[in-house]
Picture (cartoon, rainbow, N blue to C red):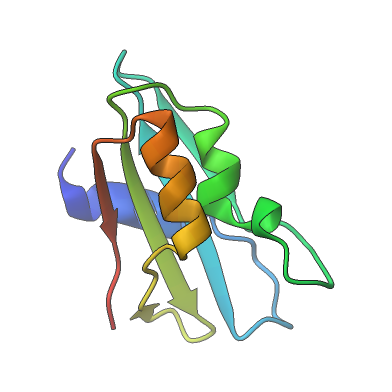
Length: 103
């Protein structure tokens, strides 16, 4: 698979909730070749544990690659750069590369 196919997989993982202005999903390729996915969780407050990247990191090992995709309501990719907290968690888990969508 190439980078675009992994980003498409991350986009398909995003929750199908019409109330949100965007949807965010993440896919990770572990060092053993296993593919894992996660999506943003529901939350009323600003909580990093609801972020797809944070939830994905619990399933990853050192040497993993992360793909993050944000999709608007009309299906267009948007900026999905991970927040500082998620970047910190990815570094601590040993993620070697992160690809994300841009608008």
